[in-house]
Image (cartoon, rainbow, N blue to C red; front, side, top):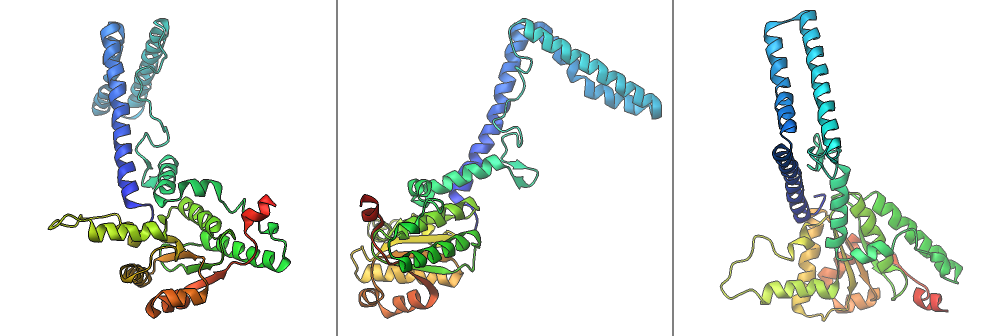
Length: 326
């Protein structure tokens, strides 16, 4: 899928508007100059004839004669430009005052260079991806660079966290739109599950994929709002707030098990698991529940998928926040 569709549509519209506004602003400055300085208007009229003069020369001349005439016209054009620049400077204006001024000179504010996306638009989409992922602030503060398993005093715990850390790095660097593994992060609070999830999200977004990260409570709340708060007799929108959970390249569901579990939430969880598995779309699920607690809380058709279709990453150790305070 690549970048979030809504982000792409919105930012593409922004770029279309930027390119047009830059041209309109330049035209307004040009008209202002022509009103204030008739000499500039006369020079611009003469400069605008250069292309027509070259075409006229090409229709009646050829060979060396045509080359000499084109060279003469170019020299004349350059002299006019220098005269125009000097005139603007004398009136306290920059020589490029009426030029089109783009924010990005590389793509002229179109967002594309040829058929390829310009870096400026890609960076804008990446930033928008942080915002729409649901964990923009966490992505900025929780990265692979500042995850430190070395704080754990137990060597075996450190070694286990380092293995998980390296696995998550490889996972993010090799993430694919379809076919990437599903991950189940299991362990008590404060052991780095959310930190590594945010690090994976940031790296995957930087590589141009659409990521959605949400807490289990907010995830189920969105489905409840769609199910129970739609106006009576109203039609469903073409897209609603739950579409992002099925459409995104990577869905990260945090704190599974903190929601109020009932028949409706179990059905929602089963449907999202089944849909994404069938489409080959990857998920990361974080939970503080043990394997046994997951079996007790959720139906077999859910736990069979969690433990059959997800790679389990077991987090052990002491709460990192307690270690930092200590």
